[in-house]
Structure formats: C-alpha cells, structure tokens
Length: 349
Ligand SMILES: NC(=O)c1ccc[n+]([C@@H]2O[C@H](COP(=O)([O-])OP(=O)(O)OC[C@H]3O[C@@H](n4cnc5c(N)ncnc54)[C@H](OP(=O)(O)O)[C@@H]3O)[C@@H](O)[C@H]2O)c1
Image (cartoon, rainbow, N blue to C red; front, side, top):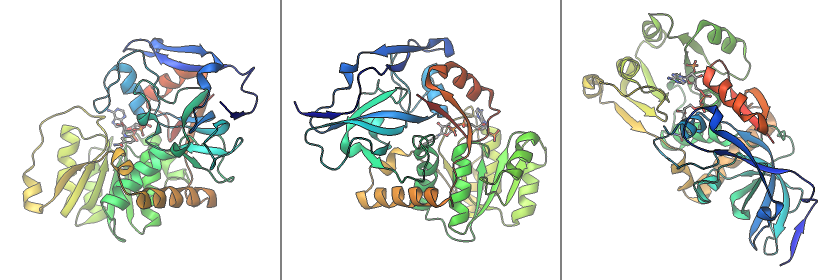
C-alpha cells in the first residue's frame, strides 16, 4: 500500500478509555501502537491539537447519556481537529500538514466506542473540513458543538426573524454564548439566564457573550424581570435544562405562538403544566445536532462556511474557559463537574 506520512514514528500515541461507568477514576490513558493509525485507501490520520469537551462526555462516562449510550470500554469525545499526518493512496483532495476539523458526524460514523479523546484520529477524508489559517490550533476541535448546535436549531429549523426575542438558559455554556453571537448577527435580541451572580457579572463583562439582557435564577423574581423586559414574552427559548419548575416558568414566559427548543437534559424530568401552550398556540420541540448531518450538503456546507468565516473574521469568538493536556482528562472532567467554568473546556493532546 502507498501511504504518504510525516514522522508518525517516535510519537506517543494514546487514547482515553472509560473502563467502566462511574467517576473520573474510570478514565484511563492507554498507549497505542502506531500501526493502529495506518490509513486505508480513502482515509487520513489526524494529529489532534484540540478536542472540545461537552457535558455529554460526562454523562457518557457516568452511563447517563440517554441519546447515545455506549458500553464500556469506550473512548468518549464528540469533536476534534488538528493536522493531517498521513493520507491513503486514493485521497487527492487533502494533503499532509493540512489543518482540518472533523465533521460533526465523524465520531458517530466510526464505531460507537471510538470517540475523539485520542492523540490521533483515523477517519475517511470526506469526514474532514479544511480550516482557515486565522482560526487557532487550540480551538479548531471545539467549534462545531457550540456553533452548529445553535445555528442548526435557531437559523435552520426555527428560521429566526430579526426582532425576535430569544431566551438562553445555561447562559455561561459555550452553546448559549455561541447562540448569543449568532442571534445578534441575525438581528435578534437575547436574554441570558444563569445560575449565579458571579457568572452574571462575568458574562456582562465578557466581550464574547452577546446578551442584550442577563438575569440570574438566584433572584426569586427572575421570570418577572424577563416579563418586564419583554412585555409580550419571549418568542423562542433555546434550553438544555428542561426541568419541571424551570420549564413551567419558561412556558409562562412564552409569547403567543412562541417555541421552546429543548436540546439537553441537564434538569430532572418532572411534571409540567402545559395549559398555557394551548392558550398561546405555543410549542415545545426537541433538537439534536445530528439532524443537521442528515440535511442536504448545501445546507451543511453553508453552515460550515458561515461559521468558519465569522470565526476567522473575529465576528464570532469562541469563549475558551480553560485548556488541559489530554492526559489531564480527570482534572478536566472534575472542572466541568464543578459548573464554575464560563465557555468551552478544551483538551489539547
Ligand atoms: N442537542 C444537541 O445536539 C446538543 C449539542 C451540544 C450540547 N448539548 C447539550 O447541551 C447541554 C450543555 O452542554 P455543554 O457542553 O454546553 O455543558 P457545560 O459547558 O457543562 O454547561 C453546563 C451549564 O448548564 C447550566 N446548568 C443548568 N442546570 C444544570 C444542571 N442541572 N447541571 C449542569 N449544568 C446545568 C450551567 O450554566 P449556568 O450556570 O450559566 O446556568 C452549567 O454551567 C448538555 O445537556 C448537552 O448534552 C446538546
């Protein structure tokens, strides 16, 4: 087999394996032989420089991820990016040294047990997207989950209109901050909802967080505050929490014909009163990024191009909370579990 490569030898190759469902002690660094990363005809080997962490990684480790549940042992991770280090003989549209980001369906298209928490990643070349030079090595593997989750739901599915008001719970998360940038870019108004005064103050001072208003649930009158800001209520709610009492309040906050999009399950399932939905002809819908990967190529490529161009120009800016070496993954998971971070946590192999 003809294979083009640069110095794969002498590099330490490793991945993170969840040995069993449970705490961070279940995360194990496993060294790999470099023969594992030999590309097939249409494959490339990527030396990852950036792996975006997602709350779903914690849920997968604990055995709580309801949408995709792998069984241990498995390697977590939903996104990544880096440098192409080797290509198979049939690959003509990629080159060694090129910087690429994995397409959002790349980890799902390989075996379920092979997520992106790895020093190197083997995939077919059509699952890679070239990245403009202006986007740093550190963030290239952490863009899709925040930006495509928000763009796909709010722009593609919801067709957000200028002047619409969007409520963004979990305002300190990278998904909500990315959403705030996208909504403002499209002419909408944003209201962030966060869980502490400390985060509220930090988000107000943070140039990446494009919230027109921000409230905290620590204030018992937080929903009255939102009603006062909006008058008519909010048109759209983009919510990863979706728990009973909070969801009840959101339903009451909806404007006529408003929509709540639920994209995460951070809260506990509970009883909700749906009566106001009938009165307001309003809706609750679910959203997963996976749907965008089933859309036409035009839509997918339009989304990639818009987001990468905006990031390269600096009109969108990924909020980076902290980076960790990949072999410090236990610390990184503990950090995410504390819920004190604002923005994205990134693993750098
Ligand atoms: N549907 C999709 O395709 C898709 C894609 C990406 C992410 N997600 C989902 O989106 C959610 C957020 O993911 P992420 O990676 O952005 O997480 P993250 O960075 O860990 O953000 C979590 C934030 O959510 C807020 N929060 C409210 N209630 C919470 C609770 N009970 N437990 C933990 N956090 C709570 C907190 O923000 P505040 O303190 O500001 O309130 C917390 O900091 C997850 O449920 C994830 O699975 C879904």
